[in-house]
Length: 463
Image 1 (cartoon, one colour):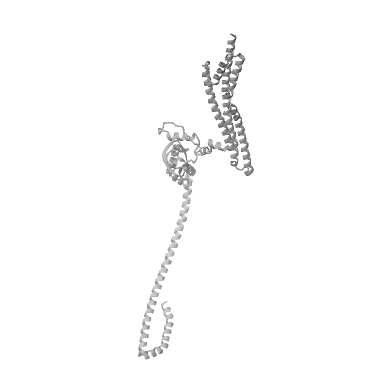
Image 2 (image 1 turned 180 degrees about the vertical axis):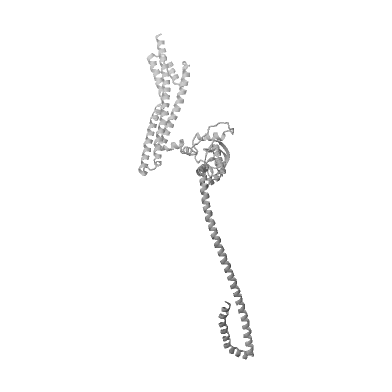
């Protein structure tokens, strides 16, 4: 390789020398004109040629040294490649052997495990079910972060160790015990206004939680307690207050509420409208029925008070027949008797009848109005029923029967007005009967006293 490089370099050196030979006369002219000699120029060229030859020789030697080094590196790389290929073959054989051995061991493990695979499958299923249950359980408020173990067991692909199975059993027992306890603890809750407050929470097993007289709802996803935006109607808040005010003595007993559906029944109670909402469902006809009932009740109360006072004054007057008073009907009848004692029996009878007839309208005043109102109330209820059914059929005509909620307003109005009409009519009928009986009793008292006075007057005249 060294000789071939010299052979290739020789023609280039001859070309350089020939070129210098052609250029020498020009340099000679220049040097002669500047005062130099051709001998000096030749010496200079020879000196530079020797230096250039030395540099070329160094470059050639450096290149040759690097070529030897590259050959050594190539040989080392080829040797390493052969060693790596040999090691790869050995590793592949070892990997195949290990795979075969793993398969044999896995088969042996499956055979020895037997029914344990099914047992741990049940364990994983129980862990998943228990995890879902605990996520929505009220007991998680007092014992958070119990789902980590259950998540690992439910999502495990292999057989869980015995220690985890024991922990699963412990968690199940804790949940069973907590489901039968009434617990008190401090915890934050969210009010309907969106504000967070702290208070004493009363937990009744895993069924419901209360704070004071308010019921709470637990959100398992956000792990938050929130006060129901709408509380159930009476008497349910009272039961919640009983739990809050109950003594801490474990032997004490109070009345409370347990929702076995974990909030479903309580949600239905919340949707139940209260008395005022029921009245509003009756619409305009319902308000008219209520107004009729109020008017009839006012008249009945006024009549009852008046008749009770009249009866009391008449009873007092019966004890003082010789001292008639104009403040009661019996006193006015007695006064008519005393004013006409000198007349004959027939005239006296007429005078007393006149006095009784003068007081009868006062005793029976308002009773006919109550009777009319008691008859009008159910008719108004029937009117409201018809109006509600008309609204229902209009909703069916417009929207069909696909959504029952669209017909609920008309049906509610029909039923509520009917109920209101009956609620107003039945008491008014009973009140009218009671007041009529009391009024007739007072009139009979006047007639009895009048008849007695006439009989006594007739005996006096015969004598």
